[in-house]
Amino acid sequence: MVDCPYFITVEEAMAICQKSPPQIEVETLPIWESTGRILAEDLASKVDDPPFDNSSMDGFACRFDSDATYPLTLTIVGMQAATGANKPLTVGDGQAARIMTGAPMPPGSDAILPIERCRVDQDNVTLLEAPKPHFVRRQGENLQHGHIALKKGQQLTPSRLGLCATMGHATVAVYRRLKVAILSTGDELKPPGESLTHGEIYESNSYGLAGLVEWAGHTPVRFPAVADSMDSLRQALNEASSTCDVILTSGGVSMGEFDYVRRLMEEEGDIHFWRMKIRPGSPPLFGTWSSTPLFGLPGNPVSSHVVFRMLVAPYLRHALGSDGPKEWTVRAKLCDPVKSTKDCVTLRRVTLVSTEEGMMAYQPRHQGSGNIESLASAHGLTLLQPGQSGEVGTWIDVLVL
Image (cartoon, rainbow, N blue to C red; front, top):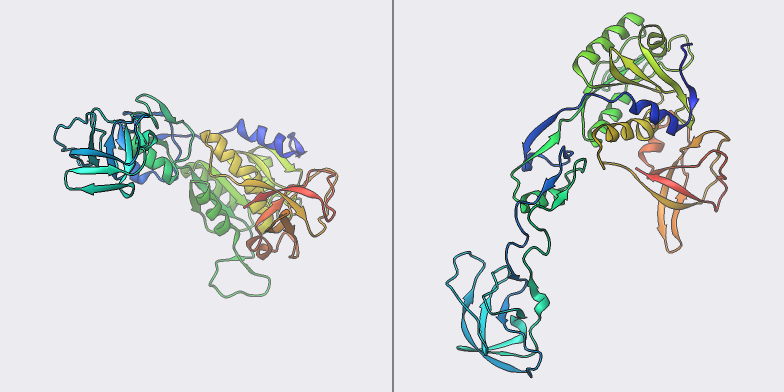
C-alpha cells in the first residue's frame, strides 16, 4: 500500500482534494445562454434601477398635501404613459396627471392614487382618499449605478439572469463547464437494452453519475465500461486524462483481486487518500492520473451517489468558488431506527413528511448499498454523526437531495 492518508474524515478528505483543483477557464456568453452558469467576475449595474421616479400604479399623479381634506377635486392637465414619448408636463397645485404603471412621475408630483380610488368627470378627477407617496418608485431604490449586485462565484439562476439584464449586461463572463470523464469498471457490465447472460448485470452507475455531473453544472463524458484488466484501464485513463478535466471511476477501489483502479493508481498514479469515514461509501480514493484529478468511487450504485454528494460535488463547487447548485439540510425527527457507527457519518436513505410538529423522517426501504431503488424513492440522506443516536424520536440533520 502506498504511503497516503487512510480511512479519514469527510473534512480531511475534502481538504486533501482541494489541494489538487482542476484547470478552469473563463468564457463570455450572451445572458440568454448563461442559465445555471457560474459568474467569473463581479457584476456592477450600468444604470440606476429604476432609472427615474415612476408610478407603481395606474392612477393619478399629484402633489401630496397633508392638510387637504378628501374627497378632493383636481384639474387633469394631461397623461403620462410608459412609452418614453410623453409630452412635457408639470403638475401644480390643484392639478393631477393621468399616469400609467411604470411611467415617469411628472415634475411637481410626488404621490399617486390608484384609478379605482378616483372618480373622473371630463377634465376633473375627484380623489376619494389621500394619494400615497409610497406608490412612487424612487430612482435608484433597487440598484444604483456602479453597485455590485452579483458577485463572482454566484450561480446564474433565472432571477439572477433577469437582474443581469436589468443592470444593462448583454453578456457575462462565466466559468467554462468542466468536462468530467466517467468510467465504470467490470467484466460483468453490459449496456442497458442488451441481453444478459448468467453473471452479467446492466451498467447503471455511469448514467446516474452523468446526471449528477449535469446537476452540478458540468459536462459528463461517458466512456464505455472498462474490462477488468490493467491494460484496458490504463488505456481508458490515459484517454480520459488527455480529453477531460476530472475523472470519475466507478468500482475497483476496494481490496479485491480484481480491484484494478486501486492497484493501477498505487503502481502508476498518485493516490492522495484512500477510504473515508462514511457509511455507505467508505472505500473511495482520490489522486491524480497524469496530473488530472481522479475520484475512485465505489461500484455499489448507492455508494457512488453518496460519495459524489459528499465529496465530488463540494469539490466542484470549491473549484469554481460557486454557491450552487447544492443540497440543503433540514432538521427531521426519526420515525424509524437508524443504526449509526462509532467512527463514520451514517447516510441512510429516508423519506420526509412535513407535519405540524416539523419534518418526519422514515426509512421504508432495504438499505443495502446495491439497492438503487431505495435512493430513487428517497428524499434525503441522514447526516448521523459518529456515535450519534439513531433511535426513534431523535432529531437529526437530513441532507435533502
